[in-house]
Length: 351
Image (cartoon, rainbow, N blue to C red; front, side):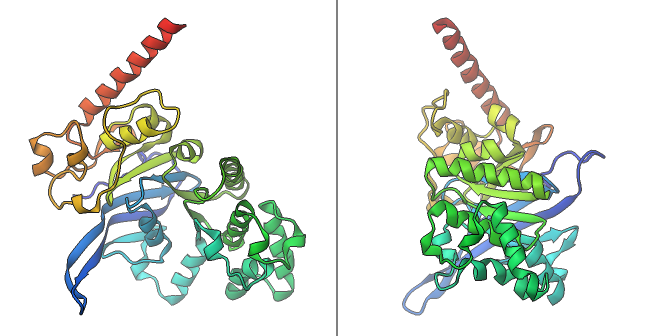
């Protein structure tokens, strides 16, 4: 059974722009000198998500969780093994060549490491102008004006047009990458760990830029990150991934205030400045522990019972717009509330 994890549909909700329906991705396992296929590893497992116009959805997880792979599928850089991605209620598999080309313009990606994704042989002008030139968005004579406009939007002066990527700092290169995506006038921007390679002070500036641009250009974001603080700041909703599966999805404020999956609680507990410190070890993805049956987190979970090894938990609604894949979600949420109350009680005594 597929449960599409989306906010409760009401007349107040904006329309769905992008949807993942039961998306799975398998990578083949090869062995021997002749690289014979010896099976496969499931990298993404039954992903169901929607993205509504104007919202920011954060994909939160540790390295190896599948969040970047999911982002590449949503952009169209990878094809799922099964399941479908829909854009405005139409499957990408139904798109012809012209429609797919239009999709690649409407859904843009900002990459993590701009040192690798910006061609060092090209000037900034040519890098930012490449997309609109290929798609013929404006007459050739208007390209420079358009490039200057989008560079100005991200805080890069027009004097940068003739320079090369190596002449800029990491934060400036990230701004150039954002301009390269936005000049295509997309509906959706998928940002893959866009601040992870930057200094903390620059991270805050880039996050603020993303938020300002969202408001000014009416953008819709998928923000891929392992940084809980970044997700907390920028996201309307958060989807938590662990070993290729969604374990918790909800509105950002509620999910952070009342996490109901043990993995989400571990992420919150391990964050800098966290008031609640759980005795469990910090999350650490182990690809060998992936399993077809049972809960993928059970070998690390302090709440695990026999059913966790026998039945794979489905995402179920535990509150409005809050979904959790855990057999003991209510117990987990209650335990977190007790931790919170204990912290508040101790703080009250100290004051």
